[in-house]
Image (cartoon, rainbow, N blue to C red; front, side, top):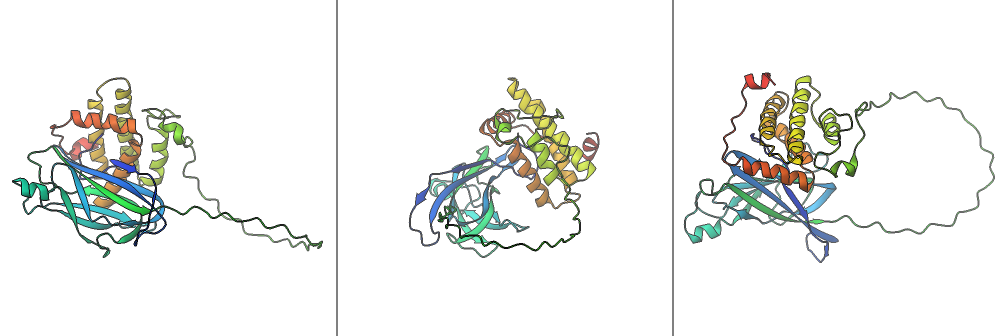
Length: 336
């Protein structure tokens, strides 16, 4: 599924085999990953490439981004990154190599095959080393909106793989001296128990939840169990927001069930798209637009967390190409 809002979702991440080599900026075992992102023009959709490391990891700022479809013109794309404990993302700006917004002629089109590094908000330079847990790639615009249906770009990012633990020898135990212990009874204050936010929810389905297109819905509430548990951690605990989030998730699940049954899923997807727009509007009442975008992009990344789920959603997107989907009105959202 794709959504009509100024938001984003996970699109594609590919990890490549380990390569151990000398690098004057990254040390130890160095690996590479690819992030791909795209912008569709009719209707406008942003599909961001997202990757999360297990912990803060050193990576190299790429010098350029390669255009896989369309061209860059003289427009911009961005690489966002954030450490585990940071609240705000840093960003690096990239600009298309052409001097023209809509390149004409082979020379300008050749220049528009790449977005080149311009600057980073944290002062990082091209091919310098930065540290982050989260990476996000976005196409802000391309030079082919009147010709191609979308612009797609790729970033190849080198990073330091975590070092393998060094085995340690177990020392022989020393003889234990026979000492009669003195018993001291200490009464400690009783700590308040930590509330279990997952109380009453189905258990985490783990990898079993990825075995089928529909996933696992143990309590039959219309929402996948992994998404249900994610919601209580990440969606603000406001009645209207939670209600819209559940409706939007239920409609996405109906889309997947329709695809699993061999139907097109288009009508279900349009319904989910409208509720997604309403959820975005409601989130902005308590969050900034960027924070609301981040929540929805993470939700969509989870919804499409297997190859089969992503492919089925992409099939629907292709079938909706050229369809105009207006932003829902307040009246329409109130009726949901």
